[in-house]
Length: 196
Image (tube, rainbow, N blue to C red; front, side, top):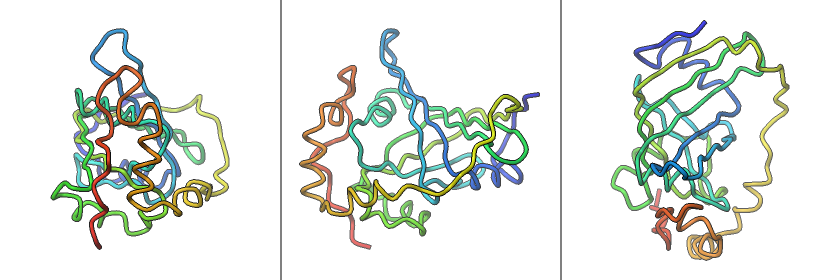
């Protein structure tokens, strides 16, 4: 049923890169802390960087739980499910970190996402995850669902923001600069978007 993989390659890599969405799960160290589970969509917003590393774009939103948990402890699980075709679930358990706009690695990392216009989505960070455990399981109980396309609402909403107005928007959200449990979240104001 389940299999552990040493690397993200071949069939596994193709599966991850072809899915229209995935899920992230993180948690604080505190035993009574709030566990976070988030869906991620928009084709082209995640990539396999190498056999042990994946990355995805962290867009503007009303909270920053994943960023806060990664800044505290780095633990993260990513999960892709087959909603079409043969059943499959792939999980990448690992250590992640948010790479912010003022990080020297930003320019090289953003180049891995050629199909995404970052100015449309209020790009806050690039999440880089180094795999510690890679597993796939049967997915027999995952239902068939049809992918009809990406929603355009996020891009329409955040395309009108510049760096300053996006920082103001995020500063007005209760759980962006700090998490639900009070952990440091997104550093505000956001650093300027590096020139292309």
